[in-house]
Length: 402
Ligand code: SF4
Image (tube, rainbow, N blue to C red; front, side, top):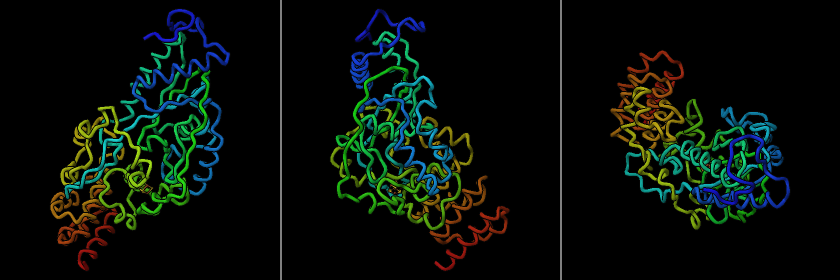
């Protein structure tokens, strides 16, 4: 494709064609960016400068100081680093911020034995899918503008405040649930960026308001939304079931409900999503492309090796918590649903799973369901891990009392 080419053919020879430094080309660059990004399937496109994200950095500092980042190492890095796009790419002059809907539709009813999966994870691994398109977009930009572009492509879990960059690029405003909300599309969208050494006219920052609505705060089962826009990750089901590498605290387990991976509750109740969510046009994000809306609890609990786990979930976002993390979550769901048909699989975990994290949560689930006292007692005798043994003893006393 060769659109808006200035000064001859596209070239990869450095220094032959450079972006011109006047306002006109910057404006024209934005038009080209918008057109090509939409053609590549991104519904939302905005541009901001590569200057530090001052407001975002300050919010992050307060959040970190309150200890709300939990164990997310990448979110505990210095705010100066996370809020400065040029720390990622020295030559960056603009951030092209992109949004693509992942909304696959309404969540069907739980068939009764399912672990619920957050909508963004029903399909293929979005990191790979989006990055491929970003690289394609960069190539098309070079061709269209007739200049070599130094660029880096990112989506999620990068050391950059992506949502702050996207807000400044006009993609939306921060909702009370801390999600970026686009007034015309809601918040079910992925954010991605291209950092480029090209001067592009920036968009105005995103604007909007939640008004007096507090539905997300009222709906959150764990009280994780501490103030408008401030989510304590340590209480958030999304964090607890994905990024958290340790146990799910006992007091929070019953509140996890049937969520086996992530949580959509504060987005589901958002009026913008209820009215404006747009179904994704990318087939990669459909339920058919990946794990879909529910995991069969008993099946997941039977996965005993990393190889088997990879075979089952490779190429989907569900690999993120690792085998032990996903089985931990499924144990909690089994306990919350009092899922009797999962008892043989839970007993299997108790007897032979190599991970103490899984054995301990399996014990908790069996304690909630009841009827496995003999197994729990035998396991508690054999167990060498002190945390795990304690879980088994507590489960035994719960099962006996219950
Ligand atoms: Fe609360 Fe779930 Fe939203 Fe986390 S994702 S803040 S747990 S409603």
